[in-house]
Image (cartoon, rainbow, N blue to C red; front, side, top):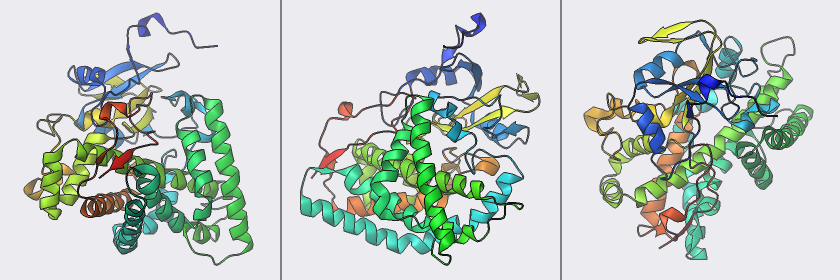
Length: 412
């Protein structure tokens, strides 16, 4: 039985809304953002929360210790039906508050440092080259996601964690089932399958210590009375496996689409490879495949720029809209690979795609490196790459984003 919608909430803006373009948010979000930085919106279950579209307000709220990320709280909002599944309550790294969050992040920080990302770059370039060779041998059309965009982050996270890549078809399918589920029950079924798989894998590592990868290292850190329990380790493994390949593969695919649809910007990138880091950040700003920089619930009343977020009220930070705040990004709906270059380097990284504050994405160094490699190798080796289907033939996904595209035929 659905939750009755209070009369005062019936007129609220309904969240989420679908996109009609891979790199632009819903037109409804744009209209909302023009009215101010904070808005009351109505969710699928009839509950209302705050949606933040202002960049400065988003940073302040994401950094405020009175905003809880603890998804096990009864008042934590489930912004989509699938997020009401128990498997998400909580999820490691992003779904815990200090001190648990701080302990887990400290355990993982060396594996996701900038130094580690740089050390992996050569092997990722080699991997990308092999995948392109495979596409060229097979000949056009090729399936960009299956042949290129998904294998890169999937192989990298498998090796980093110590998960057998031979099992990739299973964990990729279950990740899709979890993140694309239409209901909490469907999400729970897929999530439980992943949980059981990782639980069995960790058991094997416990029996044969000394293996390689993050999970083998952390098995030795487990202490049921200490900072890392075995359940914590399974939750960490689940979060890293899902986050380490799905979002990055979608970002590679939709980044390629965005570049192909802006040939002048692609030409600028190809003529000056030094633009690549700025171009990646501009793509991260524009595409915002997850559409959400963070979801929180207030533990105390918080006054911010004339608005009052009451204790117990949920807050959703819209990355697609905070990344288009004209106070930070002039002409924010224009795609410009030079936006973050040269003297503008700092402003180019002001986007909130990776979040902000203590929960800022742990894997952002790895993700940026993978994106830089993926785009540079692909367009260097296949300079006349083009979409094999019209742009309007690409599917959108309910939830306001394009994440969830599983086929992207390309030719040359």
